[in-house]
Structure formats: C-alpha cells, structure tokens
Image 1 (spheres, rainbow, N blue to C red):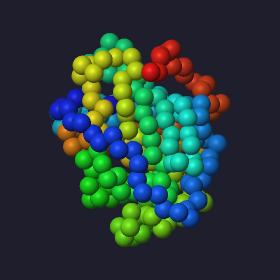
Image 2 (cartoon, one colour):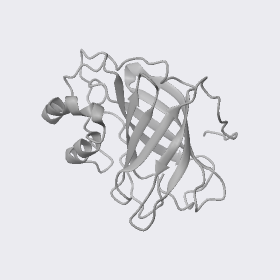
Image 3 (cartoon, rainbow, N blue to C red):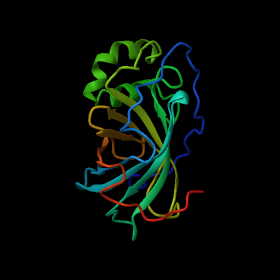
Image 4 (cartoon, one colour):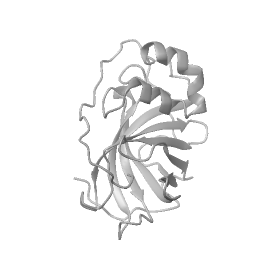
Length: 215
C-alpha cells in the first residue's frame, strides 16, 4: 500500500484457465489460516528512504482452488493518524489455477519475469516459465510457494487516506522457515518496493491486530 501517486482501476478478473493434471502446491503448516507474520515494506523513492512496519495475518486458504486471503496492517505511515489495515486476496501459482503470468492488473509477461527474477528461488524455473508461464511445472514438492497478493479494500480508513492499493504483490514463501519476500508492482508507484516478513512462532503471538470489522 504505497503512497498514492495516481489512481488506476485494476482488473477484477480473478480467474485463469485451469490446467488438468497438476497437483496443488505443497501444503505447508506455516502457510495456514491464523498464521501471523511481521516485518517491513520498503517504500523508498528517489526523494527519500522509508520503511514501514507491516503485520500480515492469513485469514483463509484453499489450496485446491489456488486461493488465500488475509489482512495487512501498515504502521508508522506518515500520512495516516492510525495504522492502515487492508484486506487482500491472493493467488497461489500452481500451474493449474494460476500460472506465473498475471494477465491483468497492467502487468505484462515481461513485467512478470522481471519481478519473479528478484527471487533467487525462481531462477531454476525460468526457462519453463518463459515457454508457457509454468503450466507444465510440478511445484507440489518445491520448497517455495509463489503467490500474488492483491489488496481489495481499506478496512479502517477511507480511500482518501493518501495511499493506493491499485497495484499488487509478487510473493515468494519459504516452506522451511515461513519467511515471506515480496515486491510491489504498480506502474504509478516506485518500482520494486520490497516486502520482508518473518513467521511469528506460535501463530499470532508477538503482536495483535486491533479489532476491525471485515465487510
């Protein structure tokens, strides 16, 4: 949720053609409903260096359909008087429900490749992804899970809060330690804003969200 530069209206099409015969990505206990993560998002621009503390909670996950959702809370946001909470929905890249090619949200295949290559764990998959988006990859035993997270709405502030949720995150999740790395993509925002999160032991221990009503 970077500082708003210019609003745009992303596509709301959340589906892609499914490919039969592909197992879902690995089921990981560290990526499950109720799990909490904490870290930072670097929102630096040419004018200044800046990082926000970020908390994320997984609200639900459906591996069979490549879907997950959650909340993201950004603290110490300069333009906000309170922590800013958003609700997001995600796509699990599994070659069956979703491939590495986004196909919406103003992201071209070239944009996709540039961002996925920011993750070292993606490099072994590059040639196959360039060929067909990864439709024929078997990621069921891969030690990393690739996702896209798209913020859908602000939970506790209005759309005039000075921030934008027009873009989305390319996300890589480590099944071994639950760490999350991501890069925000929005043509109207500073490029490659990095999200770095660590899994909080014991699920939600370590911080608590305020009570917000999800509509």
